[in-house]
Picture 1 (spheres, rainbow, N blue to C red):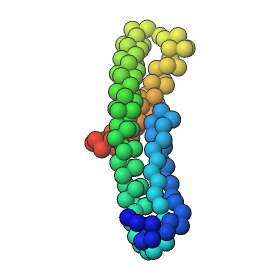
Picture 2 (picture 1 turned 135 degrees about the horizontal axis):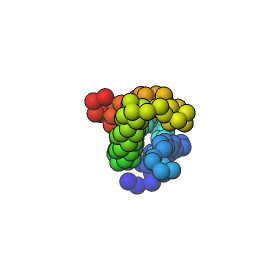
Picture 3 (picture 1 turned 180 degrees about the vertical axis):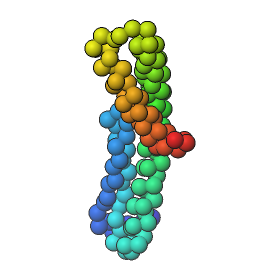
Length: 126
């Protein structure tokens, strides 16, 4: 494009989204003198959609890792809870173990809620 017919640039815009592990996704563009507000909004919307898609792609492995960890923790707490229930059937538990026995159902519920949220965020069934 020759300089005489070039559209003047009035300014620029930048859109940034957070990404996992402290990273950041950014995109920028120019605001042209002869551009309508509708055109500018459309371009900015397109940029935001592209960044959201990239953000989702980057978050997926991080979310999967978190989900896997939550599921492993749930299994460990469930096993410990069942072990304590068995012990409680055979003998009176010391106060510390009794406290753990009382807390395990609450911990399991919280973990299951977190697992459900992670699955929803990943587009899986809750």
